[in-house]
Length: 433
Image 1 (cartoon, rainbow, N blue to C red):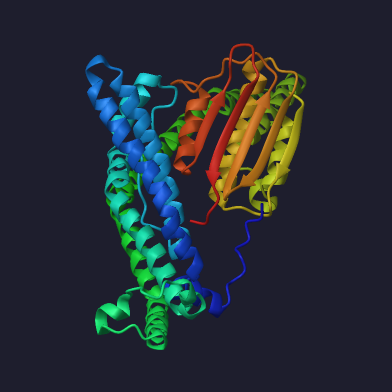
Image 2 (image 1 turned 30 degrees about the vertical axis):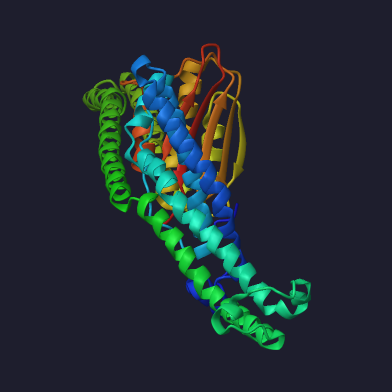
């Protein structure tokens, strides 16, 4: 999927999309008429499910019934939101559903649904919106057909009995056929002329009910603020873990080698004058230590930020990481050009940490790295055919990786049953800061 922005709309198209009076007429009529069956279904589900659930809650059967009713109301509310946004051409304000705990059982998920305020608002909308939907559909149908029938009255008035008593007769007491045709035609024309205004008002009424009950901008903003705060905490934790690991690796590796190299050079300096031959092995050992130290420093620098990532992008960086892996790696990278730096860096660390775990713990014969952009999200997957059992528990490398992904507003999922295979998947939003 390309990350390029869609071509700019023409001024005429933009004006049509933004001005509610210029929205297509017949989709609005369809929206009002389709609201009747949708309203009936939602009302029956809400009333029947709520009544049955409340009446049986004392024997615990009511809890799953209420939860199922709320799930159904949630689905119908989603349909209403999408239909309202399509017909008005504008997005509704945001709403927020509480996220169930991953891996929770059926009872826990039911209780979580029962504690979700937006789910109850959806149920309330199914009840309160029913008379609005019913009235809107009936008025639209009768007004439209009545206006059309009046405008075409001349074409079918011959089928009426001669002793009919129509609207004009009630107003004037006469049954003059030409005058009655004229009155009905004018009345029908007026009704059809007013019909678009009436339809706009009915659409606004139904959309207003949806906006009032199916949206909750305050809750959505509060939830978003919580997610951002959690992301900041995860970023701090990830950086702290990275610094501690880097400090430990520097202390255990290059620092010890530099100490030994210093001692060897001091010994070499003392023996150069009195015993040059014995100083030569010490000098060779110091050179070996310097090379090994340089190699370790290069390895540690890859855990910070590889230059190839900044210079040539994610494709080249992942190819280099795969080439360094002791386990054969198959790459399937489909990234359209450069991505935001934070996204590329996080994706790179997901792959390198995943391949490190494959090499150390999986006992795998091969691994596959896949990246793709789907719906403005970068999906990175590292899979292996090893023994499985990987998890993101505290103290494991994957726990720090989960924090790093969360700090980029992404999600990390791990599927690693005993016996394998293991699939590590990160989903990162692709957007500029």
